[in-house]
Image (cartoon, rainbow, N blue to C red; front, side, top):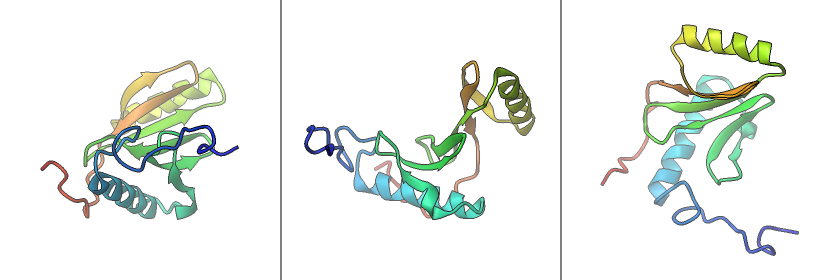
Length: 123
């Protein structure tokens, strides 16, 4: 059954969407595509997640914009608590901010420079 049959279709912008207008949606996709290019990640790994936000998906996590034009959210899962501890130590050395800390998973805020090309959506 499709989401339409269940009456749960997500809008591209507006209500039930992380984007308030079409410019935010376009800017977010552009920022994710440019980050994927910079990291040499295939565009096949870029898709909308269950909340309709553009995301780079991988085997052990995903990456998406934070909501501003200068940082990204990195969600990581590890196969054990010990491995998660090692990931956190390495991330701390890189200066990544730990925002959520689970037993074997968590989120980091990456303060990366904006890749440009984004529209001014503050007006």
